Amino acid sequence: MKRSVLILGIVAAILIVGGAFAFIFMDNIANIADGDDSGTFHKIADKVDNATSSDSSSSDGDSDIVSEVVKFNYQNGEGYYREVTYKDGGFRQFDNVTGELIGSSYDEDQEKLGNIDGNLE
Image (cartoon, rainbow, N blue to C red; front, side, top):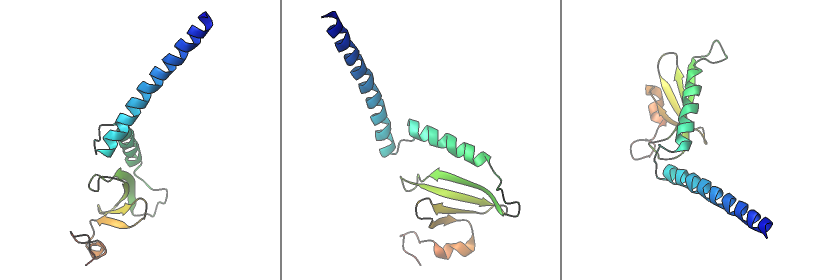
């Protein structure tokens, strides 16, 4: 009898701890879906971004690339993009999934980008 009460108590404790963990996890997921960047996921992603951006040189000594950083796409509200910064101070932004150019500081790239309505000119 005492043994079954002890086992029942252990199972109840595991369910309570598991439920608390699941609640916290789901709360963080809900924060991400709502665009709240205070969640654990975004804190970790920001630390990864900072670590990535501190590695500012390419292994190719002749490259014009100064840094490549993956960032959360706050403007779109979801997804990530890769921002490449060059020696001349310019940058290009590429969709992390498709590789499509989505932003640039270079005049010659502007015709490749969509206008404000999202249509190509």
